[in-house]
Amino acid sequence: MTYSDVAGGDELLRWFGQVPTFHDAEIISLSLNRTGTSELRIHGWVMTDEVDSRGYIVLKKHAVVTFAITDIMDLELDGFSRQNVIGGLHLQRATDRGRAGWYAMPEEETDMEIELLPCYGLDGFIRAKKVMISFVPGRPEKK
Image (cartoon, rainbow, N blue to C red):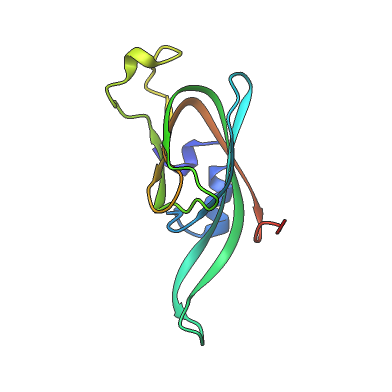
């Protein structure tokens, strides 16, 4: 499964110029809805091999990426904080986590999973029937 298999995935790949890892990306928001669409918004970028004058890795291609998630079947989330930095994000066909007895709907081979790898704050996974991607180039607005 690749980003190309998801609506909006090809556009995101063109923007970043590579498959995004979302290493050290920050979760801006997570909105869960029992019916309708849930949304996961993440500030991501491309890390370069360059280092600036202060010794920081140069980040390019900033974007606020929205994963629109419909028909959530299962999730397990942990560690919400004021700041939620992930070690990475895996978008993949859903894996067997031994939780089928808890699914809200029958499982299918086309089920999707977003896995948020732990770093600081929120991590876990969301299993759903459908995921769509959109993004806005640039950094998130400061509030």
